[in-house]
Length: 246
Image 1 (cartoon, rainbow, N blue to C red):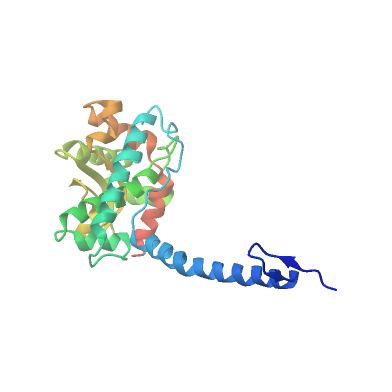
Image 2: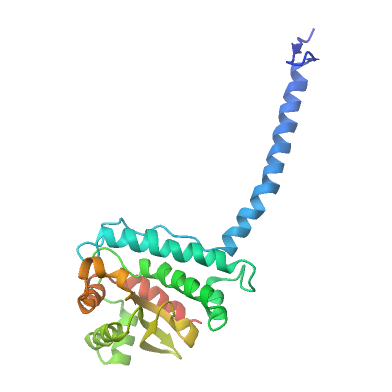
């Protein structure tokens, strides 16, 4: 005879029915969770900005960029752009659009959203434009293009540093591809070459929070350290090749 079990409420049931109940409950609960959580998580991942992890340790860029600078810059400033951007993105025509479309579309139309989306875009790449033991040899085709368009690598570096030094107040200096040519430019605040029909492949943040802890008011020294010792030329080259295909 099959054994029976008494439940807490006094009902009697067989083991088989308990197992069946467990299976049905587990399936129903799993299905319920998938309906409640899966789609919203998926939706959020495509509609919101998120703070990436740094691709290196906080102290990996010393002595050219300190741990303290990265902690403040990444964990506080970039996080603020992410949080503010998410709040400003809700309910707009750009909600759910790729980040580049948000940046270009909101330029001149929604200043608050543009400022934060632009800065989020800029910083997503800024962290990747640097690496420990950076600088050094530039990959072949990119180096040839730099020489063709600027005369020499040293000339390019001079133009790049000068763009950053002469940017009044907060902003960025850039190397970008426009109409098949490499161009150096500067932009205020969170603006970037995307809104001027160019594809950025290298940028340096010249907001004071980027360098003041380490360099105080010596922006030229910061820019020289960036271009000579921090740039991840492999990532710049990756963006260069992608830009040529657009």
